[in-house]
Amino acid sequence: MAASEKTLTISNCTTNEGWTVVLPRRSRQRRKATKSSVLDEKQEPWTPTDSLTDPSKEATLVQKMERCINKIEKSEFYHTFRGQMQTSTAEYFIRILGSEIQMQMVIYGIGSIELYEPPRLQLSLAILLRRDFSWIGNIEVFDPILSATETQVLETLGCSVMSINEHGKREALKPTMFFMPHCEAELYNNLLRANWKLNLLKNIVLFGNSFETYEQHVSLCKNSPILNSMGHILAARRFTNEFRIQTVSDDYYNAFHDSSWHLFSPVLETELQFINS
Image 1: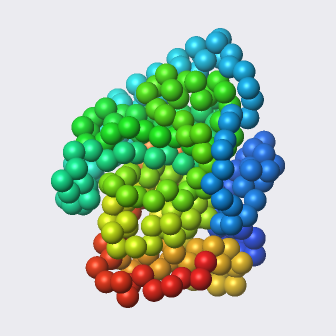
Image 2 (image 1 turned 30 degrees about the vertical axis):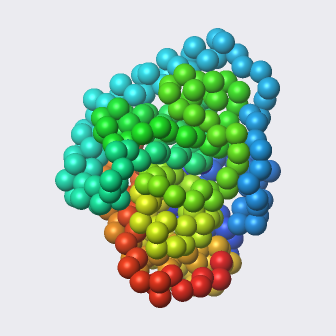
């Protein structure tokens, strides 16, 4: 979902784009071709958008990623981000891990790491987290727009690229970190709906768009049709512990603005009453 320029916007309360990340013109039509009716789509086999890798492009992209990882690693942004994980959210991570040694990381909607810097920054952050926190395990990645070259580079960087388009519907049967900065609201809703049980929600750590911001937008756009695809997001606010992050500098604003950690703590089945979305 990442792109060169992205913001959450409420400039249009009558269309889905009023509620989702605004994509640049280059990628918007491409997205529409792969995203139709996300809520109703079934999991399906997936292969990259092209069939051939390009060794020269791979080498160039690996170098770009290495520079990006080094840039974030030395930044005040990462120092602050890592500090928050070691203090305010640490007890929640420990609770979710329980008796497990590690939790896997699932990245949905990373976007084109070849064409844009924000996706590279987002991926770099995920890679650094796995390196610096021993309790973060394997990283699985998926975005329907990934090319064969990008797929190969992701594998080179130690990530696994999914061969199935799950449409965000992975059940968290064990502790799982879902890393989803700037995805569409429908994907967050899909994830919550697929895990709308006490024993599943307690296994989820979600990094993505602020649910609090979505709720604020609802109060301003009460008649927007996008509300029909946000039922679980809004219902989850009752038992969500949300921790906003600081972008610290403009260098990281496009990639991480309005992002939060979300941890879910429902204790009663009645909190998970049927949501029609």
